[in-house]
Length: 385
Image (tube, rainbow, N blue to C red):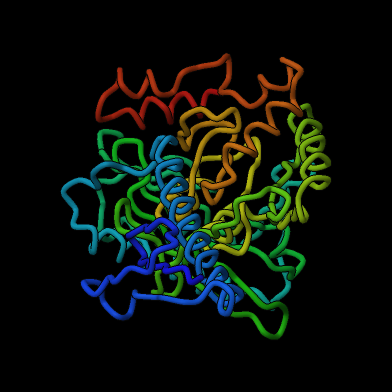
């Protein structure tokens, strides 16, 4: 007895003991075989089709799943054309990187901002070079630099967040990775970003540049990039960072480091937040988290991740602002699973409170209250706390 089976990528036909003619279908999707003779060949075809359909459904599920996380990128980048804005952002980052590259194999003049927080002459020279580019093109914009503080017009809709040398300790030791990071906010939300990462090492330094505009995608050296599709924490490579102060957040993050090291393929600690987030966007790691970062650490990186298809939240799962105190970025697929593990690991209320803004302050409410100049109020609050 023969069994007639016909199938296509979008049509399902039940098994039948009666041989049927399906001449209306294209020959390319018309398959008839004898069950006794060809079952070893036919059923694998069905399984292959089912596998493809399952993968398609999973992909569609993941796409809709990611939409539950609020976007951090600006809904509009304002009156400046996107091409013009990203050109200046990229030029500013490259200009700072030229200063760093010129100094990378030379002796360092190191100072200390704290017990272990380094600052070199290169940090200051890179920031000065970046500021010159920004002010030449947008003299009325507000600028927040790691070394120079706040300068510019406080009534501006634009706020530039500049880290002239992210990963100064690595730079001081000639150890990759470190970067120059430039992000610009429009009315409090990231609008454009560029991160120049230094790769290689002594005697073979090179750079690659990550860029993004809100709604325009993310790129590395001009090529579009996307986050990974890894869906299991057990198969994920993760990244974190630790601040200079060995305080309660540091101890809490050490607990998370142990937890995720135990359940993932590994946790790396590279020492440069902008680089870590760029690696998530590039798809070579699945997630990155850290406490106690500054706006200049995050403004560029979070937009690059989001535009590469990833998710960005605070570590308690709340809506993210660059003025927040913690960040979790991921490929989006493992994001909720990571949040579950964070919540389970930090069951103590005092630990969970470390993930939130000071005094549980609602940045989102303040943003709505202040309107278009929300970033000014947030910046003032940030400087006070």
